[in-house]
Image (cartoon, rainbow, N blue to C red; front, side, top):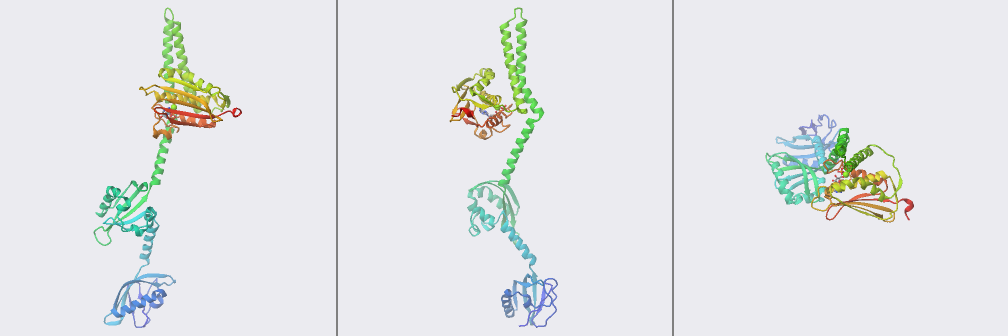
Length: 469
Ligand SMILES: Nc1ncnc2c1ncn2[C@@H]1O[C@H](COP(=O)(O)OP(=O)(O)OP(=O)(O)O)[C@@H](O)[C@H]1O
Ligand SMILES: [Mg+2]
C-alpha cells in the first residue's frame, strides 16, 4: 500500500493513499518530506497498520493515540482520527492533535498526586473512596486497591464520620468549596489536620465527587504552641526583670517590716515618755524593731544576692548549724502563724563542703514556701518539719515537710522553672535558685507529695571528701 503523506499543521491534515509524495507542510514538529511510515516509530507500526486495515474496511476509525518522530529524533504524542472520502476511497482526511502539552499536564498532575506528602483522595457521593494517593496508603498502612471502594466511615470510624466528615462532604457535594483545620482523634492518636474539599464535576453540573486534600500540621502546631509558651515565659521574664517591676517587688517586701519598725518605734517612745517610763515595754518594742529591721535587711540581701555575683565560698559546714542559723530569723513568723516546728536533726552528722550563705538561702526558701503553703490551711494542724540525716555512704539529706495545700499534679513539672509561681506576690524565683545552688554543690533537689496533705522538698549534698569512709 502506498505511504500516507501527512500534510499537516498538526491540526487536521489531508492524507492521500495515491503515492504522490506531497510536500510535507508540518511546521515545527515534523521532519520535512516525510511519509507517515517514516514518521511512525517502529513500536507503533503494527497498531498503525491495523488502523489502516480497519480504515479501509470501515471507511473511518475512532480517534486513537500514537506517536510520531520529531525532527530532533524525539517523539511527539498525538491523537489521530481518520476517515476516507466516500467518493474517492483511496483518499481521506486525518485530524491529528498534538498531545504534548496535555501529556505534560497529565504527567505533572500525576506527579503531584503520586509524590505529594499531602493525603489526596477522591470520594464519591456514596462516601466511598474512588482514588487515593500513596500518602493515604502510607497513612493507613493499606494499599490503594484495598482503600478504593471503602466507605469513609470504615477508615475514620463511624463517630468521626457522622460528627464531622459527613457534614463537610455533604456541603461539598452541594457545590461548596469547604476547608477547615482542627484536632482530630483517630485510632492512631491526635492529629491537627488541615482539610480541603473541592467539588468535582467531570461532565455534568452535578457534583459527582469530592477531591479531598489533607495536610497533617500536628508537628507545626505543636511547635508553634511551644513557641508561644516560650514567648509568654520570656515576656514574663522581661516584665519581671524590668527595673520598675523589681523596684515594686523590693518595695513591697521591705515596706512591711519598715512599717512595723515605725509602729514599734512610736510605741517605744510612748513608753519612755510616760511619767514613769516603762523600760520593760520599751525594751520589748525595741526588740520587735530589731527583728523587723533584720527581716527587711534579709529581704534586701536576698535581692542583692540575685543581682550580684558573689564568689562561691567553699567551707566545711555542719548542716545542722546552717539549719539553726536559718530558723532563728523566721521563728517569729512561725509563731505568728501558729505553726508547730519539728526539728528532726541527725546527731553528729559528718560535715559537708559548701557556701554557707547559699545553703542558708536554700533552706530559708524551702521553709518560706512551706509556711506560705500552710497559710490558707485552717482546718488542720499546721506543721513544719525539718529533717537531716545521712543518705547512703557519701551524702547528706535535708528534707522540709509541710502540711500545706500540696502540689497540683499539673504544676509538678514546672515548680522549679524560673518565674513559675502560683502566688499573687510571688516572684517564682525561690525554687529555681535553690535548685541551681544545690546542683552547683553536687547535690540534687526534688519535691514529693505528702499523704494525706502537704509537700516535701528535699535535697542531698555530697559529704566532705575526707569524711567519706
Ligand atoms: N511547699 C510547697 N507546697 C506547695 N506548693 C509549693 C511549695 N513550694 C513551692 N510551691 C509551688 O511552687 C511555686 C514556685 O515556688 P518558688 O519558691 O520558686 O516561687 P514563689 O514561692 O512563688 O515565689 P518566690 O520567688 O517569692 O519564692 C510556688 O508558687 C508554689 O506554687
Ligand atoms: Mg518561694
